[in-house]
Length: 389
Image 1 (cartoon, rainbow, N blue to C red):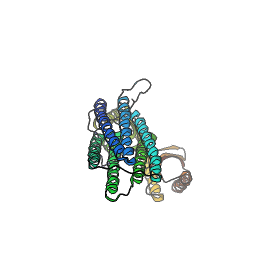
Image 2 (tube, rainbow, N blue to C red; image 1 turned 135 degrees about the horizontal axis):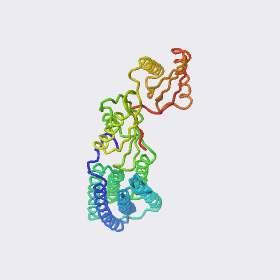
Image 3 (cartoon, one colour; image 1 turned 60 degrees about the vertical axis):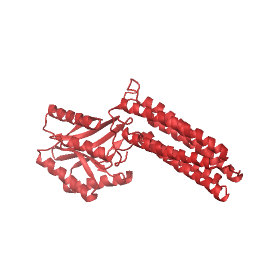
Image 4 (cartoon, rainbow, N blue to C red; image 1 turned 120 degrees about the horizontal axis):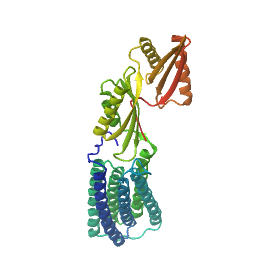
């Protein structure tokens, strides 16, 4: 979900499923009607582009059937085999829709090429043009409906369907223009219009695949939600820092997250547990995200440890301003000092540059504190970012 999109405003999974079912049924009925109208017009016009457009609407109806099934299955509660629910079934349904769209597009690509090579006369009429204009308005209505409910219930498949409906309106407009050109000039560009229609259909399918694969493969979490989780956690008294935020997505409204919070080392286990519990509950109540907070002890009193930590931070900023660190600890065994910390590096670093960076950090710290031993673990990505999987 992009930052500019609305957040879902519905009350829960059951309400979301009910809305999804109603919208899918309405889309099925509308697309079947449009298929019948366009097929009738296409046969009378002898226009390949119109018939292709009609079958595209039939594929849209089939897509809505898949959406309906996927929405119902995604709304099923968690069970022993699926402890996090069935929310990702909606992504599987969206992929099925995408491949169905692409199959239709490829089929009519071949038919349009054949029609370019072997054109046939069209039987146009004002009544047919009126019918096609009506279908454009119907598709624009579906675009608005899918767009509205896609935002309301945070449905990727509805957002994809809204784009597909807009493309369909454009497709039918191109078809109408080809009929107008034939009526005005006698030039038959129907095959070329059908070719354009098929390419738009194929591109629409590719777009749905791209949008659906992102949450399945794991994508960066929405920046607004990331900042909001951090804000809520950091607002709790005693929390000095937060990092390693990871969100696992199991479908819309099913986000599970983990985060590390830094609390004073001198704080009792009971106090730290209470703060972590309160942060988890507030995130769950405000954002609907089930959070687990891991507590990292932070040195707040030992002046020597604090000074060494500040030296490490200065070294990192000299090497690269984008570097950061957390989970710093220091132990002394006689004359030997051991420093441990996690080094946060940008995604641009590869294995070789990471190894070179670690050597540079160790060499500089050795110059500052001769004989010190450094144990460094590397984390990828900026600290303010979060991964959604």
